[in-house]
Image (cartoon, rainbow, N blue to C red; front, side):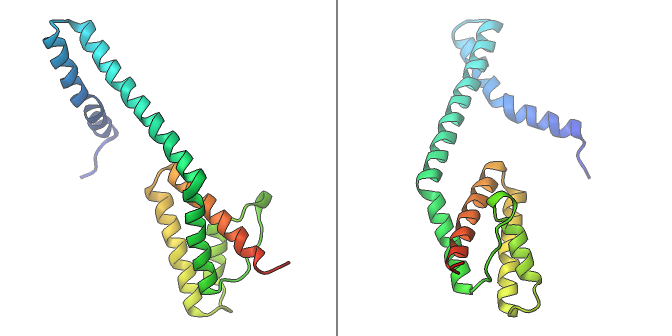
Length: 158
């Protein structure tokens, strides 16, 4: 059975508000406050969640920029080098699209079957992450792929 948009929205609202509403009701009851205390507590809880989300987002961004991008790019570069992928071409304003590159390698019948299979597996992994993750993890992975492909291209010595 397929859920309607109304059902999904209702479930999301309940998941988003219900636990916090219970806490707000408890605090309003404990303080002998009325509806205003309930609303103020509920809004305060949501503001705390927002501040925690901003802190987590900034910290994640800083860690990725400082260290994790290089770690991801190094791992991807090692795969490209170990499997002897062909030289990538720079596309669209200096960006190398890993999906296009891996797809072209997978479809190139002049390359060894093992390499084509490896390219298809990497492309499938990339597509799965694009579908299952949000914008930020996808952007991080694409940035690491871009770094790895540019570094790998430079090993061919133009």
